[in-house]
Length: 161
Image: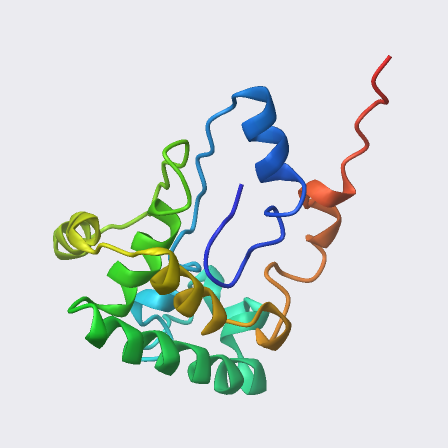
């Protein structure tokens, strides 16, 4: 399931259920589909990329979300890390049962992701990082229009008998 600083809808139901059942949590896109790595903020998104039509990466939504990036960038300096490392460290600090899978096509990004293991966050740090990304201020849907019905919260799981 997707889990990052700006996609936390699984925290209320899914995470507690997984923990209750002893199921490990393997979140994809822990860097917010590359956003916290600087995609669309520091570097442009290629026109043929799926991100070019992602609601969080276009137009006014992107302009609003840049404020979130700036907050994380400021906190990252405090932790002597990059914004991507801080965002990944935040996910890694969510529990021993969490093993995020950040995707990358570049060795330098892989090395940077490994560097997130050196970022140590205490409870107050975790709260500060979480508070820097108020979910109600993230602009745009997390997925493309027409794909919303495929999200986990629209699944039709049979009742337990």
